[in-house]
Image (cartoon, rainbow, N blue to C red; front, top):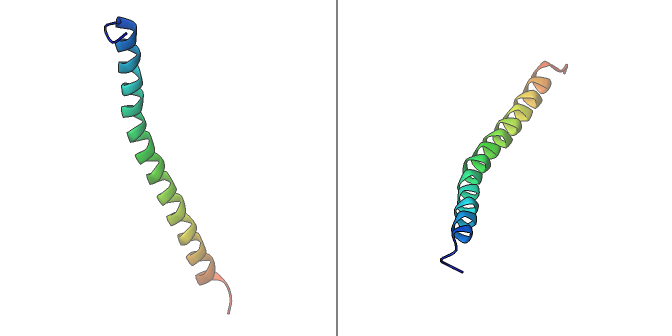
Length: 52
């Protein structure tokens, strides 16, 4: 089974998919951080512009 070309192609494809998931996860984390920062800024602006 380890000498089968199909096995090595499928293994290579699986490895490539796993490697491509790493940058996607990193980008998703940046998006979440920016969304949290945006919420914090919106709250700060809301509090600073609200009346006494």
